[in-house]
Length: 395
Ligand SMILES: *Cc1c(COP(=O)(O)O)cnc(C)c1O
Image (tube, rainbow, N blue to C red; front, side, top):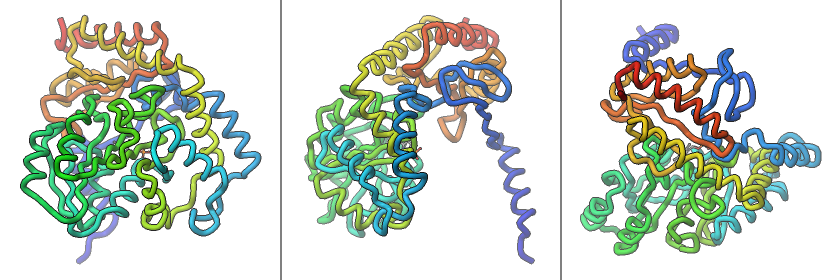
């Protein structure tokens, strides 16, 4: 006899519940800002990816309203049929100029960008070598290709060299890495990875979801930070959903990259274009980060302050180099308990355990933003001190 839907659902939910992996998202009752309201409580928000405070920024909202009025609610079709509005094309030129690349294409999210680009570019006979800690959307994107796949040790150029020397091909070779890794907040050693890739004629593909709007001059990203922005053998992809405050993804690089993706990237071909208000908000975001240098300055000043104070309290933040600031609690149960206690003290920060992170490195992941005030951070630090002492993580 076949399995009924209700059996399947209760079995699956039961096993998630037993292994402690069942998720119940907390609900924000106001806009995503540094101070907001979550599940009935006023909180300081250390859980978002809203690095520059763009999710509810007046300049972005104004341009979103303008584009909404002038261009309507929806694009009306997929881009290749009748959905390419002039504002889509203008925004793509704006991204290519910002990133200093020959071309750029915008897709619906960072997630679908990895599916579209990896699925559209790679063929049987190609070789992909991917960092072991790469994002789930890269892993899913690679499932769409018939290329040979190998995995190198996290941020390890020597292991990359070993794999590239063991597996030669006449096809395209692609080295794939996140620019900034979302769980530890470390930066890929792009200088060394690109050098090794070049020894073997390989192209480097950088998913800069957590690096764009954070790294490099005016937030131009990790590739820019390492000086590879004009390189034709580096492809940058990323999201417009984190620092840039809206939703979407982009691929930027070689001048012919965009044209190929227009013809091959399946999310581009088969999913309706971004709505005008989103395009307006995003184009204002790129203008705003270049107009107002205090955004990047505050993001990094807050990052340095928060890390130094946590260190002073005796916490382990895993030598994170970016605004992503993990605080290690050891076992998953301890991290989840700490997150609950912090929430009771008005601090919203999410606990992460195995299998998202290694078993003994369960943590709370904090993301500091430009929008946090010194007072916000001090209040969070004093809550951390209290919870860390109560749980015996610091003295
Ligand atoms: C968040 C993230 C994505 C997904 O981006 P969305 O726009 O939210 O779909 C892709 N890659 C990496 C590395 C990410 O951190």
